[in-house]
Image 1: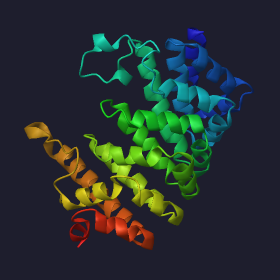
Image 2 (image 1 turned 180 degrees about the vertical axis):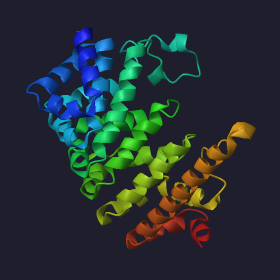
Image 3 (image 1 turned 120 degrees about the vertical axis):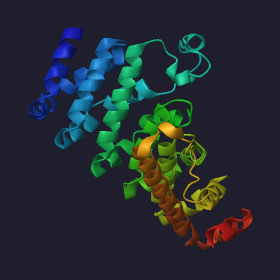
Length: 294
């Protein structure tokens, strides 16, 4: 099996082969079965092969529509329960999040590939519509997004933010996934700069839909987080963290770009929410919110 997966991986690395592989009857179904039943190198290789395939836009639809594919990908990235065999937590040390404490290195490699694959898939508006309606995927992403101690936290936030770019997803995500808005609000306090940016961008995208504005404004802490972030000024981004003297001009430029995009997203979200009369009371309840905007 490992040799067969290695062959598939090498073939999928060549762009010209990807549509041939995706179109081959039973190929994607076999890959999903390998991901489901192989907990070692075979699973990691198949996930990496899917990542290669997803880099070709024409192949993305085949992956999303493949039977059972979203279920097995969700299983790879989901946050395991404490009774699922995560005994590596004690060995990993206190600074390692429980999500990253599994001693199986192939699992972590598979997760990296799955997050990258999902990000490629949801950049297509048609695929984003389909993926957003896969309950298991959204639930898995929300679960990982709450693991702020894990590097995968920002990756999951990136996928969720791209899902909200599809306007037809906004109402569905807000009303069918009640844990999404609290998760986004929680992520605005993350120490990861990119995760914070994605959280505010997701809130801005969702607030474009008029039916979502009241639920957003009435979610505990959202208006406060928006006002607090706007009031910090250009240099006060959450997670700026102080790069020290070794960051260099490139890191400073990236931080400034990220901060500017975050502030624009915050301002856009407040503007959208203020267009809903029922939300105005929420602006007056939060201390210094009106003054910060002014």
